[in-house]
Image (cartoon, rainbow, N blue to C red; front, side, top):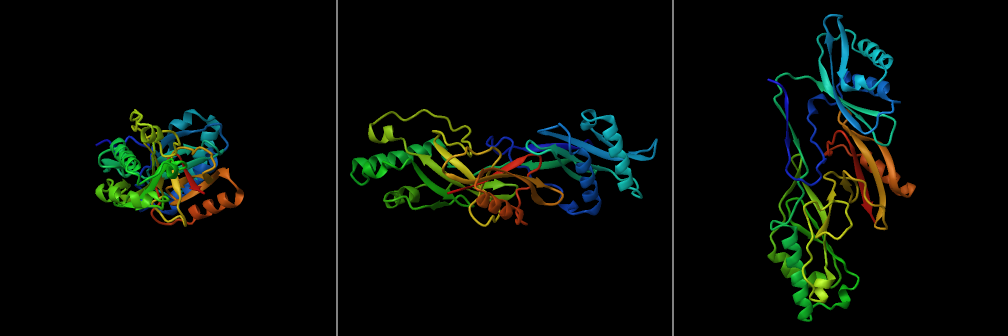
Length: 334
């Protein structure tokens, strides 16, 4: 049976989100590491950028030599591919009937290629790739947002919340923990007045990624014209909230890394907008063979903050995101 890949799309959010790793049995296998290092060395220094391609390595019985079979053979000079195959056969000398498969990711920012490789298993029928499905209000973002604004509006009319206290408050922000439970932060005098609202509300749905529960930081917009001037409820879309979007949606949502990164760290598949709320933004690529994040690029922040973030991410040894084939942007806020 031909191998198929079933893409389990749990959410339209983060359409190019993080894929689960399926090569756990091959971690730090010396043959795989050797092949990976060889391919990465040979494929560096090309003009190819932002491309992912699959490959196979198998023996050509007619010439009794291993060959790299991939679309990238058409993109590189024949001399480079010939040299690669020569070195590949030297590296695999003594190996009999070896069949490997994997992928090559050419980076956006660096003159390099990232290779992930595994043994070919002909009996594999499906490989499940789980996409990020963050916690969300059970009644939807708009309904939760309107209920929140309506409660605040009623308390303004009842004199329990003053307009002055809301002058510099544009969002009601709180964390949603693993399991969908609210983890509220202090929001001046509003915290006590909103107790009954959060008690009455059910928890968010569970957020899950690659079999792990995840948590988010969510900030619901306060619509001042609706609250103060009896304006109409705004017609906006929440089809794609955008995890690093700072525009006028119902809410802005940020994913918190599901592993221990020393302090609160967010991640996204898109580069966050550089603004006064951020103190460090770096991106890294997850190496599925070495099982760690490598090749950091610093995008924003002073050298001390960004270096600390990189070191914290490098030190992670468990519960990695397991993302293959693109950069993940990690960031911290002030």
